[in-house]
Image 1 (cartoon, rainbow, N blue to C red):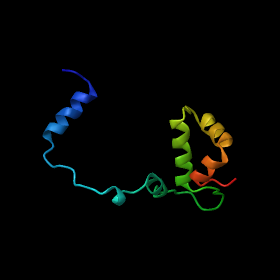
Image 2 (cartoon, one colour):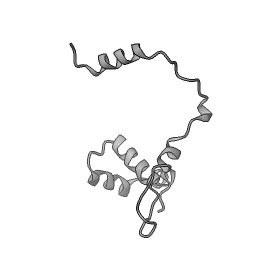
Image 3 (cartoon, rainbow, N blue to C red):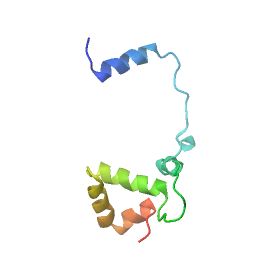
Image 4 (cartoon, rainbow, N blue to C red):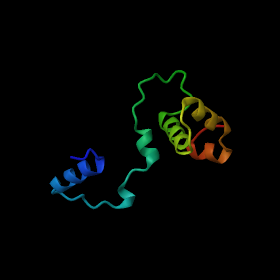
Length: 91
């Protein structure tokens, strides 16, 4: 028996009888909306950025090749004004 995840997923798909409901793209939440909905248990005092903004920054940095918190921080520091604005970061 193979331990390939593809085989495991294929077996699960064979068992699935319900099809996915059709969804219009305009009905789907954007990534920014999903990230903004993540609960943030810390108090407001001391916060500079919303959790969704920080998660988006981390995501973009990792997709750009960052492999550590130091590299994510370096990406945030060196990001262009355009990227910072799109992520919702103040200058």
